Image 1 (spheres, rainbow, N blue to C red):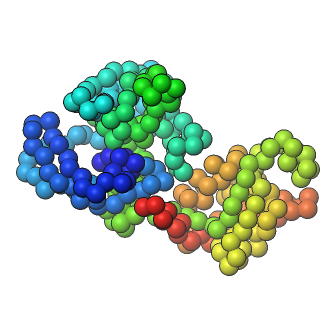
Image 2: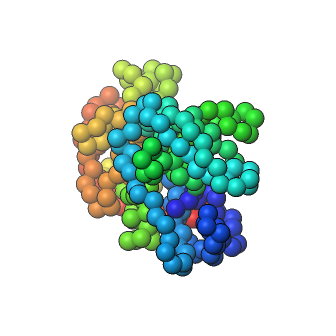
Image 3: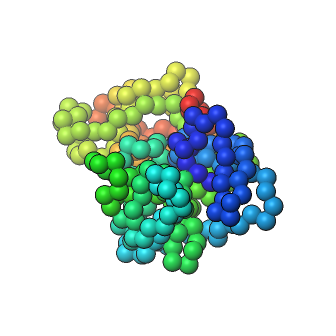
Length: 262
């Protein structure tokens, strides 16, 4: 397992083990939208880490970040869980990061974030920094998300997500006033793909989507997450406001197109 951005432009990939062995790796599959890549190597007696459960992580839990920062060799740093469920950072399309103050530096990407039992709880992926080095704000992809993505890559060759063929935008206070809405919850439908699932369901540009299924829509990130979590072919019930009237529409999801950069 590693990050997609680590191997994205590589012509050749080599995996080096701590025991001195190395092997050329082939790409099983990648998911650019969650920044995960799955590689395969052919070696005997490979050590394997135990996968933990990231849903059980609590703020204050001690974690260790493993990596090879700046190419100096394998390094372990210690810190705590600063936050869970971090999103809307603009790093990936689908975000649900573990935040930690364990030092993560260039070269740590794709490395393991482990708990005190040595179980994998995340894959180190990014930092917020003004200097380029660690400033105590690091992010890791939770292992539960990694498990789901890798299983789908193995079974399908890529990750399968739901899709409606719409473009949405957040509701600013000014837009809420313009559309005569009570608050900024929900999303404005900015575009609808012709003959796509949403178009066939009757959704129109300018509609305000306030609910998907049983969930109140918070913003565009939340809407994309709700739609993507629905398997292709699943009926999705949407509540929209059009010209001051509440409408109930039902669309059948298609499969989200795989990004061209993959």
